[in-house]
Length: 238
Image (cartoon, helix red, strand yellow):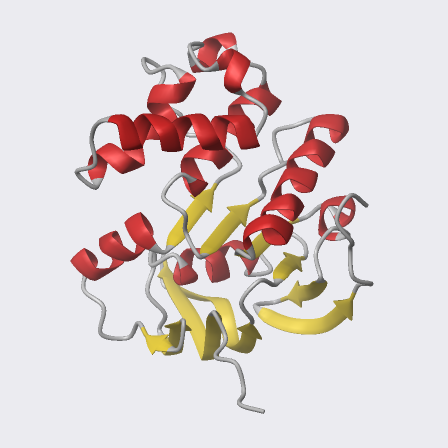
């Protein structure tokens, strides 16, 4: 049986920062593969390298050495324009801070990535309505961020991250600004995306409870992957 190409691959990836004469290792020769449809969590203390890993996969930073592949394609020669296209077509990013545009309604915030791609008209409206329904925010579609709770803002942020139907979702501490109940709801929502659309999710979190929803968890320390924990398969509706 032919081996499936991993959706995300890091091959001996290191990231070294120079700060004030000091050398700081963000990532230290990390090698990992995440298959299509996997929900993979990275957990560990602040400064362990998990957010650095996500930023490298998103093209928001460049590795010092090693290679990152998306869908089997090396990103080593990607230009900034290539990365912009990847983030508009292949990758969706959810941050701890919601980064919604204050003057726009929920629906307008969700539509924004499609407008950046030059899409207009009824198809945009239909796609926005679909994802707002998916995240249970249809009733709040005309509200601006200041009129929404933290959990509602994160739901809108997730809708915006998935409206262009990315293959990969990168979630950096998506529950970090939420209470435990709303945080749990966001993780259930992310889990449902894997089950319904077979999207690949890389979740960075310090929350053990959030990581429990993943298919498997990599514990990180000092820029390295130190232990992989496999979880039992989660069935739909569980």
